[in-house]
Image 1 (cartoon, rainbow, N blue to C red):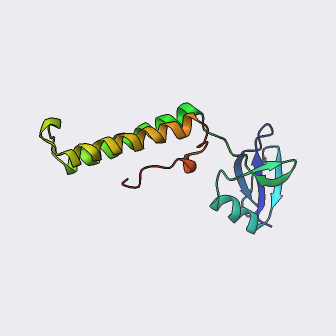
Image 2 (image 1 turned 45 degrees about the horizontal axis):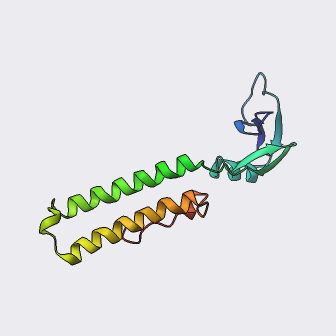
Image 3 (image 1 turned 90 degrees about the vertical axis):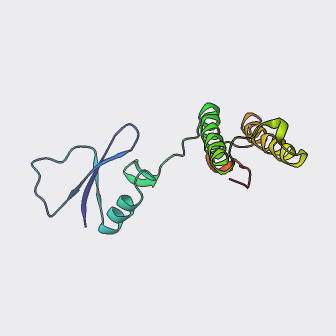
Length: 135
């Protein structure tokens, strides 16, 4: 046995480990006894597990809000645009070829589609957002 793990009684979030090879005046309640293997699992996967009814359980997945997803998308878009600006010096629209203008229009459409994925409910997590392949 490794020792004990202390956790929050309301949400099961793990708040501390108390190995048996160290003496403590008290170990906070609630706590459960864990093995060395369980200790390694919890240490190597922090935030993925909670204590539920005295047993180790998967932590609930917290879904981001639409606002959080849109903010994440804006950040990705700004990074992509900055990358483009670094790669291509500022060009006046009038001096661009028809092909270059079409590429800009296509890229804008791709980014609008990213926003629509979120607004339409097709992307509910960060991993479900389909970004343009160029980025």
